[in-house]
Image 1 (cartoon, helix red, strand yellow):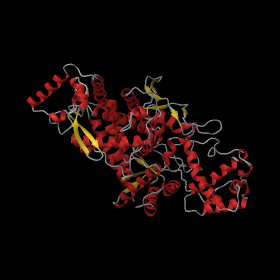
Image 2 (cartoon, rainbow, N blue to C red):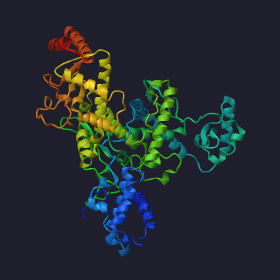
Image 3 (tube, rainbow, N blue to C red):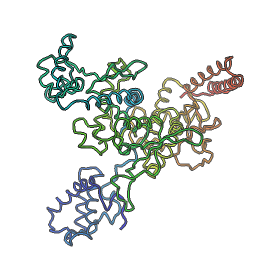
Length: 618
């Protein structure tokens, strides 16, 4: 029998665990039945069990899994003793579980919440700053610390006691205290202790020689173990720190590696598990025929990694088409490679807070560890923002909760649709990424970035119509061939959607309504009341085009019957007229460009005049 890949011949460890929990209700039900063997169960008895599952107070997915768990037992019947062999469950003959457990609550909308822009923007600023401006200091300071640590002798030199006493006398003369480090204890909280390892490396004596030194002389009440390295990094031209603490160097290295992880996850659009599996040397620079450069990443893909039998390959498989990424991603990968010498780009041992690095060597950073480190990164950035009096760069708490790796990919889709000319930006800055990562992701369009877009497109349209409702309440006007359609759309949106929080079902309803497909084309300064039958941006347009199609903002035609302009558009056009007039009158502008500016002024003034003469009130 041919089955979908959802029932595979070999299960992953997680699927085995899930299947065990899904089969338990059936085993408990069978325990209290009259039959002694599974082979004694009749189709009618299994029908009763299906009814029991259908009436249970769980959602569609658990119900479906619980019935499929029984189907697995049936599928294994040829390999089981006779008394364990089940008859074919009734739902297998029906072929549609919805007839038994009800309609699915699944929607195409990706339910992962995007990171709020108020959180994502300063987070990206700080991560780029750490990677671009501060990473060299951290790498150099870590190197200095490692050399100091490796120089600590194991045996007491002949003049060791003299060195220690001489050091203490110098502290007494200068009024300084013993260097200290911050100790974090669950019971006592934060406290200070003598920086023994730092002192050993500085004085050239073993740590045991310093035992009891804190009883002989006073210890500083704050961290004071600066490395002999002068930081060179700056923030807006000002030094970011005067020194780097001996004990802070390792934590800063982990901080920069976490920033690299964020940059790669967010700006590449790769899935979290794909980023975590990247290896040293994965990114290469490619020179195109026109002399321009791009960067490509070779790595593993997991979602579509199946063998000829449809079974998942646990370790994933090499992606046939490399990811193409922008410069900041390539630079973040380069910095990550400089931070450690392991094969994996983001190894768990480099993100450990408590456990020994050797215990996790050879494994990639876990989602849990990545989440904890991103949280620590945000806390550190906020501390620095306050210390450096950069309150405008404080990273606020995200309304949807903790920042985890899977949310970066979701957030990328959010920004693509909300930036002016978002799809144009995707085509230019992420041009290769659109063809490779969106359409070819795992050899399936539905497995790529495009599956994240529908809700964002709906929310973008909704935001535009919400602004139009506000403008209409303030007496705004609209003009153009599609003015009446724009007005009707605003009225319908006000009656149906205004003031409501849009869910996935409402978003789908909005995008199915051809009357509400209003797109704001920022570069062309107009609103597109999109009707595929009238659209000049699609030369192959047909009357029966699917409503799912969107306009092409890069091919907007001024003759199109879908155009409408509001007072807001006219204000922006007036600003362009003023700029063009200044260029036309400037002696510094070449004559051909001045003539072009004059022509532009004429065309734009005609639009303003038409709006004043034909505009109708919203």
